[in-house]
Amino acid sequence: MSGHPARPADEAAAPAPAPTSAPAPTSAAAALAAASERATREYAEHRELLFALVYNLLGSVADTEDVLQDTWLAWAARTASPTAGAVEHPKAYLVRIAVNRALAQQAAVSRRRETYVGPWLPEPLFGPAAAADGGAGGAAQDVALAAERAESVSMALLVVLETLSPLERSAFVLHEVFGYSGAEIAVILGRNPAAVRQLVKRAREHVRARRPRYEPAPDVRRQVTERFLAAALGGDLTALLELLAPDVTLIGDGGGKAPGGRRPLTGRAKVARLLTALSARPTPALHITWRDVNGAPAAVLSAFGRPFAVLVLDLAPDGDLVSGIHAVSNPDKLRGLA
Image 1 (cartoon, helix red, strand yellow):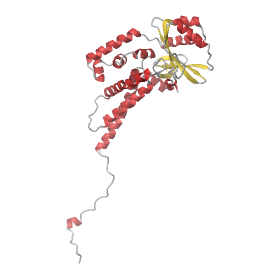
Image 2 (image 1 turned 180 degrees about the vertical axis):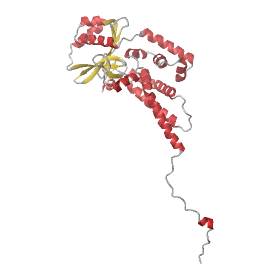
Image 3 (image 1 turned 45 degrees about the vertical axis):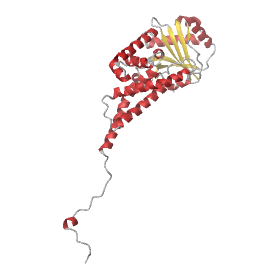
Image 4 (image 1 turned 135 degrees about the vertical axis):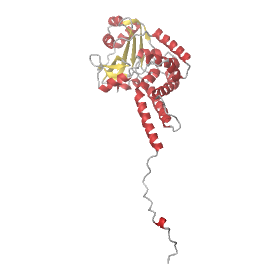
């Protein structure tokens, strides 16, 4: 006779427990994954706008990429936070992060400019290669990229924007280039609307005093650039004097790593004499190609298959005279040609 008590009938009839399986994902984990996917999609949707905006504030592709990386990290952390509410307007939120990150980056940029060797020019923003007729060539994605970054302003205007304070430049770019209202800019910059109106007004007056609102047609700019190169490379002093405006300014940016003037050179006679003197030093295997730079046709000068300079001309508004010559030869700023 067993010493164990008999089990009750209902217990004896109870079924054995079902084998366990891997737990299904929790609703919290699924929600986090969905939020991460949505955040990535929204950032990617607005990235080109953020790039163009920050580039116009800093004039440097490398600094722009750094700011966009910081913007993405802040955005990812914000959208992954379980305690933060949903962002109602992702585009506005991303723009505010990017602009304020760019303003914070300005201090480091200014310190570097203080020790930069020779004149500083904005880093060229390269678009598609130009076709022989002056139109855009290259693959379809090149054309799309150029369209996405169309808000990028000309190199000549970027040079003028360098003379503004960071807040004035931000207000000008947001209002004049990207069409933000004063109220929207006030939210982005954390200033009251009256202060923003003053920033925009001062910046607009400053820019107009130094650069009239004029942008020549691409085919005109290319034709003048071709004539300029023929005269400069051929050492034709007479032709150069006919092409240059009386107050033309030549700025060469070598950054201490390539030939470039130590300071800007102003005056038709001075610039023409320098260019004809340089033409006496032949460059073997010189080759000229055309690229879209900051929305305008520009000449890329190469030797032995390697680009060594980008030439961007600015034209006077009252004709086809050359009022500005921007030559970028710093190799760090030509990496976009690779």
